Amino acid sequence: MASKKFLFLVVSFCLLASFGYSQRVGSSYDVKDSSLVPGKRMPQHTEFLNGQYNFPSKPRNQWEIGIKGGLFQVSGDIPAQFVSPGFGAHVRKAFGYIFSLRLEYMYGIGKGYSFREAENYAKNPAWGANIANPGQRYSAPRAVTGAGGVRQIVSSATGLTSTPLEHIFYNYKTKVQDLSLEGVVTLNNVRFHKSKTGFNIYGFAGIGGSVYDTKVDALNADGGKYGFQAISQAAYKNRRDFIKNMKDLLDGEYETAAENQGDRRPKLFGNTFKPSGTVGMGVAFKLSNRLNLALEDRWTFIKDDLLDGQRWQEHAWGDAVLTRDFDSYNYLSLGLNINLGAKSVEPLWWLNPLDYAYSEIRNPRLMRLPKPVLPDTDADGVTDQFDREQTPAGCPVDSHGVSLDTDGDGVPDCKDKELITPTTCQPVDADGVGKCPVPCPDEKCFEGYIKKGNNDCATTMGALPSVSFKAGSNKLSDDAKAVLATVAAKLRNNPGCKVVVVGYCSSNKKEQQLSWDHVNAVINYFVDKEGVSQDRFIFNYGQEGGDCNTVDLRAAAEGEDGPNKVEPPHPNLRKG
Image (cartoon, rainbow, N blue to C red):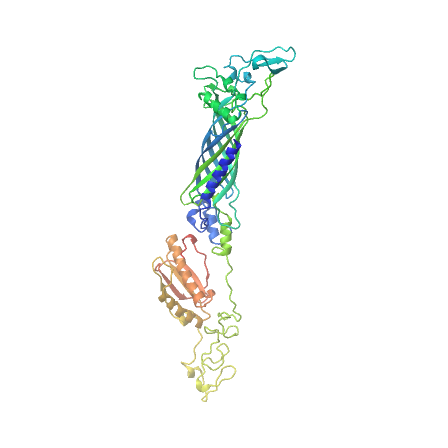
């Protein structure tokens, strides 16, 4: 019997392995997908996307519903038949990547036949009530074989014999149902060298309740006792032949109720009820993200010795001696499991929790990386890799970092006391003052040559253009980039000025985020493509009174200030 069970396991495992390993192992879900996150965990998800929390929220995952069929077997005092059927169903939900709970129902029909002739049957009410001669007790009996090969009981004290005993071979049929709540632990979904696996190994244990109804086939179709002497064990060379002839003899009605606990134990649906404990192991093989096959073996233990209707020890002729152990039952099954749930990932026991961490290390998408700091040794607004000259602090420079020399006299403007020196007055001294041939009593001589200082950036930079976007888009067109290039040139020529970048509309979340996207796109272009420092911009979005698809630029007033960078208001709606 054990060899049959082992063979069944090996064949089933090989069959399932061929299905399981044929499946392509893919990657896990996208942690940025907000549709997979339940509402109660959305705050954590938002903080995670904004870089304020290191751990992504747990996604909504599917329920598993399974049906199964297999072989049911009782382990008791009477040898069981391995071909007894069993059926079951369950529902399972993950509470983490390792642990899940499962509610399982099982129905099994167990049968058994004893190949050993019973000698203590008189104590079993199911058999004792249906025999003609249960025998007579003696204080210290022993079995002998008398004349004609007739078995007798001989008293060691007197040597007297009783009347011949009946030939009895036990049998039973039991129907068992149970409902159990089981904790399931997954053993192999945390993988260090693979994103996911095509098979899942798990163990489980739980508690529940079992009901059973056991009967024996003690009477033939005419209501009389069976002639078991015709199939005495001695007449057959092996158990297989004996069991075959036993089945041929019995009519299979199982009309007699086996011994049970009576009213001493609770009843459910008229059958004996007992609390039970279950342990088991299983392996599931993925067919798709929705389907998998599972091979499983479970043992259930109940504190009862009457699952097979027999609890009396044999060869105990004097006293009623009970067996020392309790019965249990085993259920070996092959099942089909289905994952159910919309907007959900696979059950978590199929996912590898390391997949996100490894993918971020390899190709960062959400990892908070430090902002690159480009060196600018002379702090003139032009980074060192583009700077052709290390200028003194406070000296205005051109786009190449070279000090401005408006009049071309060789003295930079920051040191030139005479900003516009006519060519006729050059060469100049160290302060940039020329020596004109005709004395000039005041500045009027240089009217039109000298550029007067003015701290009003709105005047020096003039009116700045606007930038338009296509409806619903945050992508800069080629025309918009050309406009921004002209503004960048003005910024370089006016190093002390800042520009306010204004986006419009804020009546709903979508408009607020799109306004932010527009302003962010303009500033990023200035910084990334034109090399203008981000500190020279004021980030202003969600204003009223303008076109939702337009960004206005204006020179900041003297003393006006504001943030040059703002976090997105609704990152889940962020485009690009």
